[in-house]
Image (tube, rainbow, N blue to C red; front, side):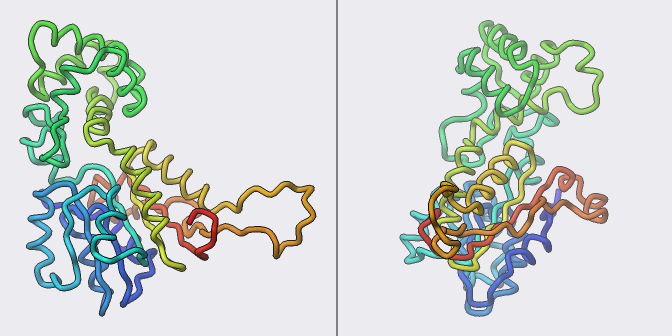
Length: 316
């Protein structure tokens, strides 16, 4: 299935691309956002990260005509500062992230991301890492499984599912996605199985987030991205579920708020430290009606953008 970039024009428009700027794509994927951004550059350059080597290989082909304007980096965007420093870059004019799993990852049965295909439990974005879904499902204690399902999947039946997993794996290892789906279905109350939506969706999301440390990476990646922005540089982030969006929203709010000043202190306005950032999007940008019709994945997408207005003491 062809991957369609979500909120493509909105993201690049709101980045306010400078033709001679230095930009970072933290989640290159198949290069949709990257290609449009590069089309706005003259002497500028894009540094593009992805943990997935398959995505990098495909993007290398997709971006071959503009290869002189892009550097592909096989790493997590949480390592952006370190990787860019190696290449002599310490400040950038823009940073974008399109979070979550791409359509090609979901649609490749062998990757084990989807409950729609039977495959070995995997879910690794970076195929070189050792921790995978199989290890989590077969080795994590019940209490830890419950925590993950509750926190990362917002699954109300987390403890029931965790207990069922532990019980089943005691007899033999849980090897495949369909085996896990059957266990989840067996653990849930009948009324839950009758509801709209797949009963394994929340559990699969939770395990995937744990495998890839997605929320930890997001927190670190945001701190680095915002710390590296030049004055008038922008950071644009697309999220696909409430946990990610909450982290982005709260981080952006924190960075765009002026430091607290004790009201009783005798300071005039010019002496008060101002925020170094401003929100470009007060509310998240969501997909248009046209995009919703064409691309089902865009239904849950939210885009938030922030701009650095000064390189002061507050937050770098």
